[in-house]
Image (cartoon, rainbow, N blue to C red; front, top):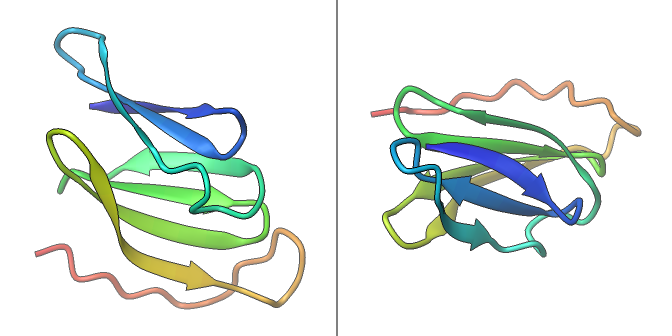
Length: 88
């Protein structure tokens, strides 16, 4: 799978084999523009917002759900929280 940002706050997920869009993740999960996306080897999507927040998404065949959310109130664009994620 691969992902792109849609409308600054939404995320489109695509099928890597066909190139077709599978679904769009909820745009209200982030409160501001998404600045970074990555897909882990374990098949999770991590999105980073400008507000700042980090969301770990569990990707399914037809939809995704928020698995974990990390928010920082330290300052604009500064995320200094240690994050431990169990990828098993």
